[in-house]
Structure formats: structure tokens, C-alpha cells
Image (cartoon, rainbow over all chains, first blue to last red; front, top):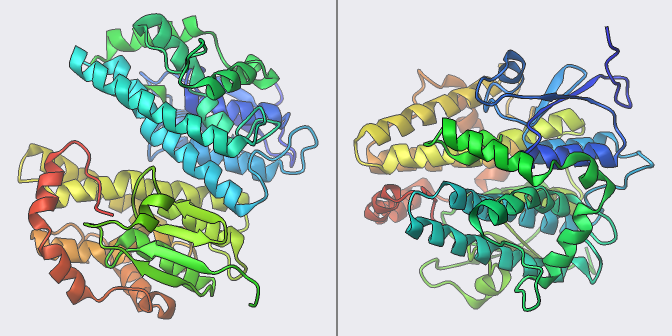
Amino acid sequence: MEKEPKGDDGGDLKLLGLTVSPFVIRVRMVLQMKAVSYRYIEQDLFIKSDLLVTSNPVHKKVPVLIHGGRPVCESSAIMEYVDEVWAASTTGASILPADPYERATARFWAAYADSKLLPAWVGIMWAATEEERTEKVDETLAAIGRLEEAFGECSNGKAFFAGDSVGYLDLVLGSQLLWFGVLRKMFGVVVIDDDAGSKTPLLASWAKQFVETDMAKEVVPDVDTAVEYLKKLQAHRPGSTVTQLLS
Amino acid sequence: MMGDPAVKLVGAFGSAFSHRVEVALRLKGVACELVLEDLRNKSELLLAHNPVHKKVPVLLHGKAATCESLVIVEYVDEAFAGPPLLPADPHARAAARFWAHFIDEKCMKSLWAALWMEASEAQRTSMAEAKRSLALLEQQLSEKSRFFGGDSIGLVDIAASGLALWLGVMEEISGVTVVTDEEFPALRRWARRYVGNEDVKRCLPERDRLVAMFSECKEMFRAMAMGSDAETVN
């Protein structure tokens, strides 16, 4: 039997996920940054496995990190958990800064990206009418506009929200970039514009740097994989919220 | 201590979210100036420091203006000395964050809908969902520990504080009962312990005043519940 990969403290590590889910992508990127080995188990969210249901009985969602048999649920809680447990890792700096105010700022904007931006672009994909779609596009662009301003304030002229290297907020927003690609390809909607005259020039440059990082290249699938998954969702569950089926 | 920047909490009387921050500060022994907003006429101070959401609470500490109640509570825990609001063990910390998030995302929303939607299939669904969520919280309370956080109040207790006082007030005003001693004995015991705690008592609004204040908002709450997002007023 194949030996289970061990975390630093000897506990075995498994991650239950969905490769195209932003919530999973961000967790995998943290694990990658910390050079932590784990067994990745892709989940079928249409037919949930016993392991998923018993590990996350409250939500039955991915990602779930199982460390030494103990599950950790909720992507934000998992990210902070990994950051704390593998704090001493020499390969990856902490994804959250040391300063409490900077940490609060990162958490605030991450919550914003997940509660305002994400549901808006999901709404574009699931809109039943042109009117609804237009509304969701407007909401998405308004939210990304806020994040463009936030980038200006947080980054201090550096490449990422967190500075010279990728941090918590970069991961939360960066994990959504894959789906911005789907929006462009399938819906002709451009969320982060990298043309001249763009309203989001800072984020355009940030996005380019983000996708070029080693961990993004390792973890993020290509847009076509996400497009195929969306088509599968549209065919099978026309009434469900996409967030339900992205986690 | 001399030289420490002043702490100012921009809140509102009766806001369960403001209370979360107030209690966190009190538990850490941090003196703060409380600025109470009139939410129908929001001040420049509030709008300037929370331009994104325009909501209370906002914590001002030196150059830091922090928004979103649970983000602020973690900030207070990290920025000030005093008894920790989160456990030391990473797994326990992750669990605390999970449950705090659960309370905000699942509990509060379904409770609001159950209390204020008009009697309908949708309201009954919300009620069932609210009770399922509360049952999960009930399970988190063991016979041995006094609070979700163990022997002392922690992040999850603070997140759940709305259930300790505000829920009863809303049940009274709406005429809809969600939590009974029979169905949720542990939660009720926890609620009594929470409101009886010395630190909590000093920042809990008087129940009568809450009833009076929220009674005037009944129609607005009902109208809000009819909309797609059951967001509480803050």
C-alpha cells in the first residue's frame, strides 16, 4: 500500500477538492508555497463521497484538509491553519503579515472578494435574463473597481497585495482568475482589462504576475477545463447556485 | 498606558455587531471611547472610515481603521495583550473560525428569514434551516465547558452573542419562537451564562430598550425579509 505523505509533524495529510474551485485552488497554492506534500483527492460534487460527507458533515463542501485524521473545513480557516502549522517552513514565508492591522486589512478585502465579487461573477454565469446578466456584470465591475483601489493602497508599489511575494489576499482573489478566463471565453465579459485605457491597470499587471508564479502554474488548471466543468454544471443542474457546485 | 494610541469604537446602540467588538475590547481590558451613530443619519466619521460598507462597527486605533465585526475581533485579539480570544492550538483555532463563520453565514441569515418572513413555504423552510443550524451549535456545547471557547468567552461566543440576547428580543417582537428550553437546553444555558458574565454585562444594552427600539422597526424588518438578502441593519 502506498505510504501516505506526511506533514511536518508526521500526521498524514489529505486534501479533498475540485481542481477548478477557487476555494480549493487557494488552499493548494498555500500548500505548494510551504512545500508540504499531501495526497490530493478529487471529489465528484454531484455524487458526494462518504469521506467528504463524514469529514465535512456541516456543509459537505470542498476543500477539506484532513491532517492526522482530523478535518479542517472552510478555505479561509484552512489557509490560516496551514500558515500556522507550517510557520517554520523555510520555503514559504507567512501568507499573512505580522502586523495586526495589515492582517485585518487582508482579511477584510478577502472577505469582500468572496462575499461581493465572487457571487456577482457567479451570477453572470447563471443569469436567466439579459437584464439580470447586465446587473451582475455591473456588480462585478464595481467590486473589481474597489479591489483595484485596494491594490493601490495595499501593495505600496510592489507586485502583489502582500508586497514582494504572494499573500493571503493575493490567493483569495488570484484563485478567481481562472473563472475570469471562463467569463471572457464563454460570455465575452472582461473583468480585469489589460488593454490601454483599462480601468484596472494595477490588477491587470498583478494578474499577469500571479499566473506566472510557480504555485499558480502547478495548481491552476487551464481555462478549457473550467469551461468544460461549467458546461457540465449547466447541463445537469440548471437551477443550482454555481457556488454550491464550485465547493 | 502613556503613549498608546487612543481606541475609538464607532458603533450604534443596540447593534449586535457593535456589541461583539465592545465585548472583545472589554475582555482584553482595553479602554475605548464609544461613539454612537444614528444609523438613519450616518456621520462623516463613519462614512470616511468605512466607505465600502458604510456600516458599524468600525474600530479606530492609531492609523488603523478596521471594519467587519469578526475581522475587528481578531484584530483586537492580535493587537492587544490580555486573555486570548482564540485557542492556542491551530486545529482548535481553525474550528473556532469555522464556527464563527458558520454563525454569520448560516445561522443569522436563516434566523432572520424565519423571524420576519410572512408565514409561507419559504418561511417554514427558513425555520427548518435555522433550527438545523442551531442544533449544530447546540452540539458544540459540552456539559463540561461553560462557553463555546471553554472556560472563558472566546471568538465563537462573541460571534454567537446575538443569540444570547437579540434573538429573544426579536422572537418577542415578531411573535415567532425559534429557541426553546426543550429543544435547545445547552444553548439556553449558554445564553444565560453569557449575559450573566461580568464583562459582558457592562456592554450589553438593556433588554427593554432593545424591545422598544426594535418594535419600531417591525415593518422594515418584514419588508427586508421579503427581499432576496436578509441582512441585518447595521
